[in-house]
Length: 470
Image (cartoon, rainbow, N blue to C red; front, side, top):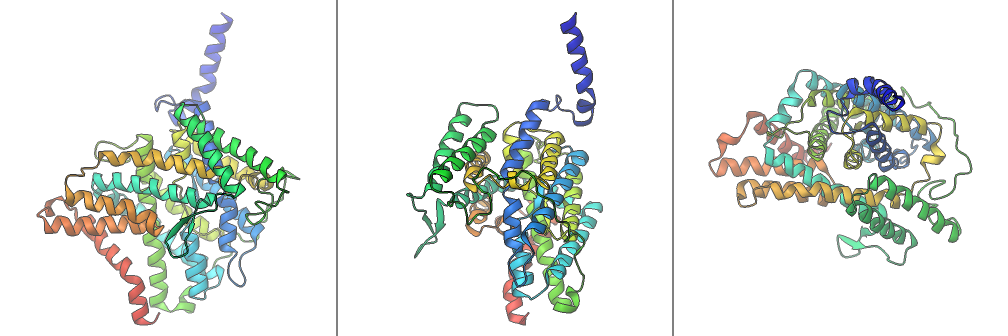
């Protein structure tokens, strides 16, 4: 009787979670969702230090502690919103690539102040939110052929694989070559290689929580190696990386919240300002769509037409995150492909996102602990998640060249240009051209044609800007 009562009590205790998130219905458990949420956080924790490093460029750049605070704040709040509103294990944080546009193009090249550059981010976020509310963004997503959606997912797998190799130092810019192998006598690369082997072994053995266990094990190894080497191996990465933290608590700095301005119109002029907004908007628009499809495919959420159920809610939260990110001076926040690491651990509901978001909010106060994880510890997870995501490429029709060539271009342009948007654009343009040239015009949705025209304009922005002297 006691055992039966205990089981009833447990069922009642889990009732509200099940009703809210449909955990069992999606083939998951509360434990699995928690592990997935922690894994995603650990895989994404690098953004707490990379985003301040990027936005700290310029004269003056934004202060490191304040950017870390707003990065954690925006990631925490918007990831929790994703879990509650969309009920998907997708996490949100300041977008790599988008923050580079802010720092190196808007501020560095065009001379805007950081508040003005954040005003550009807020503007594009408001526009893209309006496109979601009108249904336009979702309609474009559904107009993409299934084969291109699969290629986008596989291409993003290659993209995050090369991010993992670059973060580890195993792949570096070459002298006389595009890429080269890093120095194999580096202790940091040795940590990555051992971590990759440990994580691969755990994954091959189907160990529950393999990616999380691999990150933790590699972090412990990094701390030991760093201590033996004198504690300076990760000094250039950031304070406290791969070291036993001297303290666990640090007070957050909210001074950057609300520091944005729409004065960029006056600073740039109308045409250049519109081009700046359009560039960010297009990158944000298609980056998120590609990421959502890839994550949905990895989790098995896509229907037979390659559509993600309830994608409108995903896109709405993601669009709002761009506005919130700009308003908080954290740059445009977007759905993170690193969420695939949590999905690989079995995460299937918004509960995983709430765990991830909660850890980001905790990181507001425990930033020294979050900063212990070195990039070499998360790199193996990125590489192996890329392996898992690339497997969908076997489902592409490689014997139909009019489809296979655009899919191939999508796959390879992403990692080789280090841009999800460029990869999607290459796939869209080549697909539309080849279909029109081979009698497949009936396959083309009018929104696919419109998107192709917009991508053609996107690729023409740089030469047009040089031609017009702006």
